Image 1: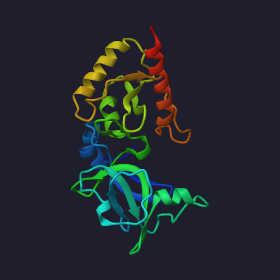
Image 2: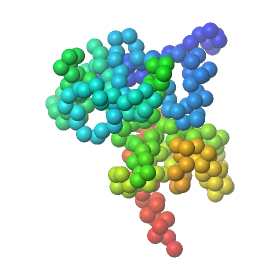
Image 3: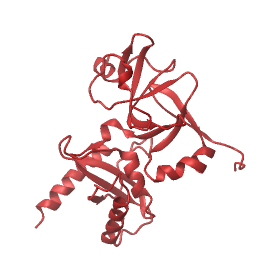
Image 4: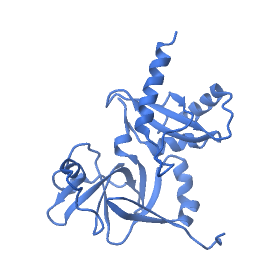
Length: 248
């Protein structure tokens, strides 16, 4: 019902910091959408006025104090860190979470670690690449959920996909879980798997992925159908692979 001139703006942020950035539908549809489909990540726009955003090197441990060498060069994927008036100062009676999410900065107070991974392009736009705790670290490299899944989501029979890691940290085996379109009859899965593996080979970010599993319906957050519980899928995938290995 909107005219062609009308524009929808979407915001990026979290409970602890909202909003961080904003993005208009014209730029999404005319420019960044095709890049997202190629595995660049999901562009969430430029930081709003009054909010500072830095991309810092990926670390699972606490960072006690801010130093400028935490930031990675533009174009490199890292954790999104923000500071601004709307950023919450801490969690109520959760000191461990405060230690893992806040970075003290003597000059400006503190930075908040979003727990999201992303990168910054030359236009100052943030590209979201998935949650830090859902990245898959293999012996060769680190795979990020949103870019990898975009490659498989291009297939017309795929409703959505989810990248998960099976195995120990640092030596994980990457697995793509596939949920088919609701009206798909599920036939010819062998052919479909081959087609998906060909898609994977065609992109440098997914060429190492050789395992595909089909799941009837992904576990998702009841509040947000798009929020996939990849941790649960990882447990399911591990069981599936053990079963396949044990079968004669």
